[in-house]
Image (tube, rainbow over all chains, first blue to last red; front, side, top):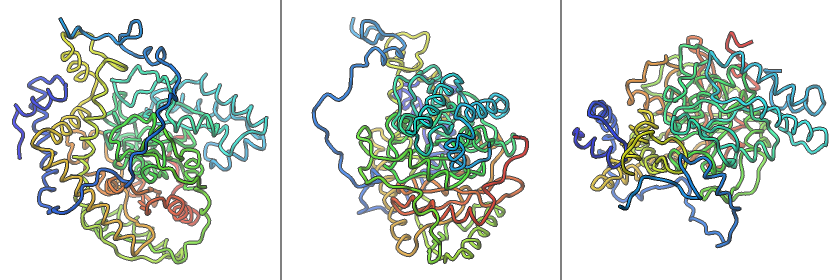
Length: 95
Length: 485
């Protein structure tokens, strides 16, 4: 398997990372090297093996539907790049 | 005092031979003097540390102190600490002052009364094995300043190795506690997945990440793990288990212990001098009454490929939160919202982090999920099953931590695949979720060699026992680098 330049650019777009053509070219070589390593997996017959998503075989627990946190909105919004009147500001998305 | 064990520091504090303020000042002064050449700390806040030390002294005076109250410690900059800048080694969080405490921070400082000396440098978002991917520059190994300390907990390792702190915390996703411990002559422990809370520990690969202690000895690590571990309802993967004293079995004799030697860890790919030190440790264990048995981990060669699918997949999801909206960096100039995301992430993340996000995005994308992600998860099961099988004939597994000693800064930086292969002996442990340690076992060309010990699930106390008895019989863990007095 080998990633084309267009594929690298497409992945970068999906990941919302702006990438120049020079960067895409540099990444293409390195990513293909890494996928060369990953390809070793394809030779292994894993039919019938249950995928392991997690180290411990435990179920997600549920908690009571109760308010347990105090209101710390001001403290949490103080670290935002741009906030006003309790809202996070971003560029206009609806004209 | 800088070479004292945590137990000795605890006794000195209890006997009022030294105050926490004096002890904390001693280490802060060392950081001021020695850190510029090593770059182990990215944030130091003397006043904040001294305020914590004064509070610890008050507890010591009031008789409400615990065994670690007043002892200074360095915190890896992956743990959110309220009021402290928490960067995770990234430009993305270079100015982020955390509004809350990670559970590990709350337990260690709030409950145990440890004093924070500051935040340690690390590979960006814990993605690296050399500490070269940090936005704040590489950390230098105190044993040879032209070499890396390992990573990603390289700042923590260098800080303890240079005695800028008596101990430190680390996190380990694929070897990030054990490998730097190995390269810097320290003792480091990655606990069983789920033993230490991940709440407030900035996520890299959530099914693999686990925090743990890094210190001079197994005894120190046992005392620190007592303060770090425990059930936390704020971490949905934290395990609800009875509290245990990880130091309880330290002194147990090793007679009858069965040590498994995986043939895959004793074959090609490991530097001869490293292997010689590991084999000498095996002989030492036999003298201590342990027996050895050959075991096999037949799928261990697949651990690096499977890891480089699973970890980037989880990372690409976890790091999608860094979008320039709620916290962290935002690009100064942008057009629409999509452009703001793309420019923020292009400017805020370094090359290695971007590379892993791209890998993760690709393996999770339509048409590739089964071939990569699902296949990696199936191989993860095979790797975990190998350990289940191996532990039928042994109590602990032993081998090298790292295939080489500390490499030169820049040596592997341009070749990601070579860098990834430096974690070849540690990654399988994370995939299986087992506890693992690295302890000093000798030197090769003047550089430390680490011995890896792998235990069965929840066998931390046993691992610490196995490490402690070796450290009572050997002096490797007491060796110090030159030029740090």
